[in-house]
Length: 80
Image (cartoon, rainbow, N blue to C red; front, side, top):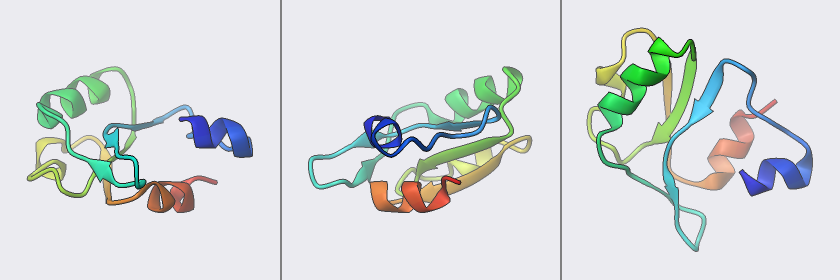
């Protein structure tokens, strides 16, 4: 994420984020979120930040702590 580089803050090694970012900072849904989360868990990720508008995203993964967000500002508040 460009913002994380600008402010020198990053997701931890076990965290990941999935989503599209709109021009106004909104986080938009992506296709096949369940498949992406399942593969992420297989790769060893423990936490995922996903679009809040993606229906059932959190239901697709029992091995990940999934947090839904609507804006880039919400993502930044989740970073250390």
